[in-house]
Amino acid sequence: MHVGRVRAILVALMAGVALLLGSAGAASADAGTAKVVSRFYVEIQTGWQTWAGTDATVHAKVYGCDDTSGPFVNLDSSADDFEPGSFRRYGPWNWNLNGVCQMAIVKYNNGNDWQVDYANVIDGVTGAVYRCLAADGSGGYFPSAYEWKYFWCYQV
Image (cartoon, rainbow, N blue to C red; front, side, top):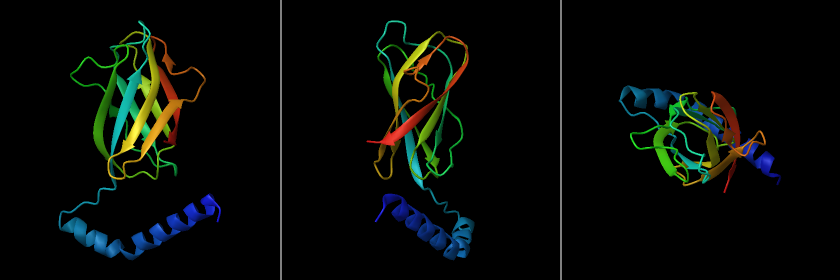
């Protein structure tokens, strides 16, 4: 059976189950138990070039394969993030996504150039890892000005 057809069947089955459990879901929400679909982490690998690091503010937004998305999240921490060669994990965030197909990264203009070699999105519940690479042919290069880039993601 074709993978796309299997996926469509599974999505339809999940939608049917959600409809059937709709009233039970409302009751459990009243009881104070919220449904958490997945806990996601974002990892950023900054390039090794001497100029590759930045002190700019960085935000990211992760998109599921069915046009769902989490909100923009701040990737800065109290550490010296995004220095040349740095690799850092951020999160977790509770998002309701169907896989991970795309990611947007925004670098604000309060820092210098930046090179993102790749990003990972990890589903902390299933253990799925999605590798994200720049979709615009830039190789993940952000100039010193404000820049917004999309990254295509695939499961590894």
